[in-house]
Image (tube, rainbow, N blue to C red):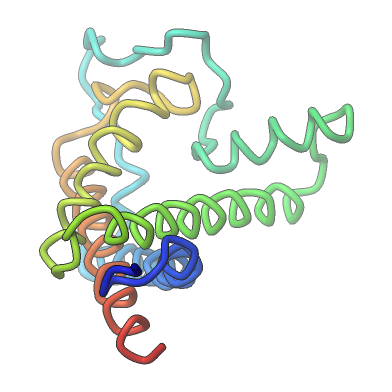
Length: 184
């Protein structure tokens, strides 16, 4: 018997669409934060001396200076497939967007499947999910994998902005899944 939340496959498909919507909303967060502060908060670095958490990579540094984690992942994947890194800035940018939207959609798919196995269907689950992605993904995993500098390299306000962007993502994903379940 199927639960009222629907099948896991339906949840996955709805979640993928919701994840794309959440990624778009996250981009809106960054545009609004940039407009309000007059600069892109993601560009801020801590100007003080060395900090123990500046580099927490377990497998070495895999990002280049001024390269986002999504750009690093796109560059690495391209290099593995093509046998050489991308040369053109447009290709690098496209790869970064593909990784960003792909990851956002995939995580939305994970969120969409969760209600099939438990009762996590409230809008409050979205910010909890977004916070988990921020803490374990953005703050820890990408630094541990060497795809970004360690968390000590960035000022507190940047961490808070990144959390805000992930809260926006999570809430949008939860609202989108809820709306899509009602419509479909």
